[in-house]
Length: 83
Image (cartoon, rainbow, N blue to C red; front, side, top):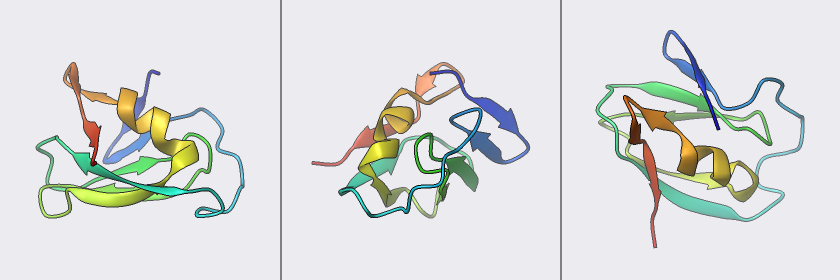
């Protein structure tokens, strides 16, 4: 999935939908990037998730997971699933 960067916000989809975050299972992911603070917008829920050097782990809605696991920063995978 391609993502477009706009300042410090990365939109993982062209038009977010409006489901409620947390209606589906929440999963823990880890940010592997090096940006101080960056916001990702979930591809399925349209929810805004904050990550960065001081916030590397967060729970995300499982419907947004595919977008995170394919997101890249400078040709490197930006997230991994925490098991």
